[in-house]
Amino acid sequence: MAEKVAGPEIEKLVQLLAKLPGLGPRSARRAALHLIRKREELLAPLAEAMRVAQERIVVCSVCGNIDTSDPCTICRDARRDGSILVVVETVADLWALERAGLLNARYHVLGGVLSPLDGVGPDDLAIASLVARVRGEETREVVLAVNATVDGQTTAHYIADVLSPSGVKVTRLAHGVPVGGELDYLDEGTLAAALERRTAF
Amino acid sequence: MAEKVAGPEIEKLVQLLAKLPGLGPRSARRAALHLIRKREELLAPLAEAMRVAQERIVVCSVCGNIDTSDPCTICRDARRDGSILVVVETVADLWALERAGLLNARYHVLGGVLSPLDGVGPDDLAIASLVARVRGEETREVVLAVNATVDGQTTAHYIADVLSPSGVKVTRLAHGVPVGGELDYLDEGTLAAALERRTAF
Image (cartoon, rainbow over all chains, first blue to last red; front, side):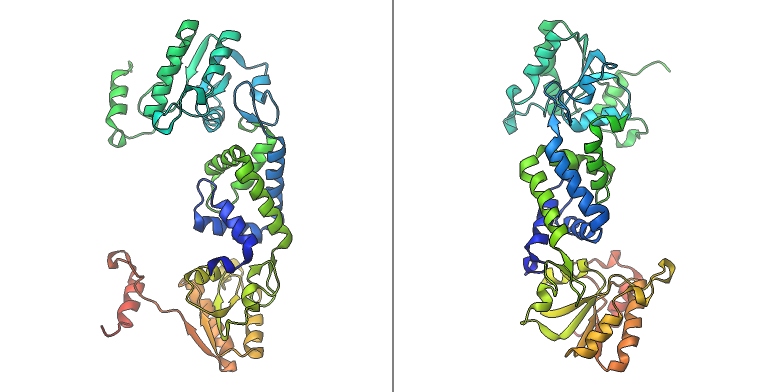
């Protein structure tokens, strides 16, 4: 009965919206109604923005970032320090680092992490292209900014091994207590890392 | 700096997605990346579904439901019992009742509730058209299926008053303990209503 309520067009919209991360079937329904109610202010511009994205967005052939140009804005930015290469798992991580605005470096997006259980091996990630970049460019340091998960750290170790013949300096993000974090809520691994790497006050 | 990361097209998409209920700035970013990654399976069909929705979806001039035809599928359905009219606040509520599949009646969407503080008066809701429908059609019962909020109940009382000259039977949803609900988590109003209307076991 539910599919017949409002015609297949709306159901189709709801079903597709429900595939977005963060939206379930119920919130997709609410989002669809919101879109239909705000036809001029939201539905039309969003449909247009998606059409433009579909048409114009490409993956950067150098670093794996997404942009409307290839190479991407970051890779083409001459003011960036090309001697530091920050390796991230996903474009979302790249954006997170850029939002923090701490780095003036270049990036390399792996496209995931090694995960034997999920059948993800080195050839499924942008590791060969990373080695080629390190060999070809003026890279002096590779910062492994992968997630602090088991798979992330396994991947970091693998990449450090693969890069070791090139003699490039390989670093990784520090472990420790998050700023604003309460000790009571932290796992033992984080506490151990924070204690071990304690610094003078 | 953040706006420059990936070009204005992606930022525009993120900003529009963030306006959907249920998506904040961070989840909108994740949704945008997901859309771009699933360009063929999701981005293109969703853009198309939104274009179709924008073009074809209309508000039913009889009941206020949204559909691709006017009158809507429900209003045109001859098998529906036209003697019962279920009054709801929003199309989302109509859909919720239809999903439950309990009713074979017709609907009337108010488009909100009376709310003097927000400047919503009787003329802002589909109350005049409800009175006209009750007068013109073969309605025998009006079920006020509005939310059990203060504004919802105020609106229900107002509508019951307005309809009283017509002599139509006006009912409302029962109050009580939700099925599966735990008493410990219920407010006193619900408990009082459930106690007062207790039934023989």
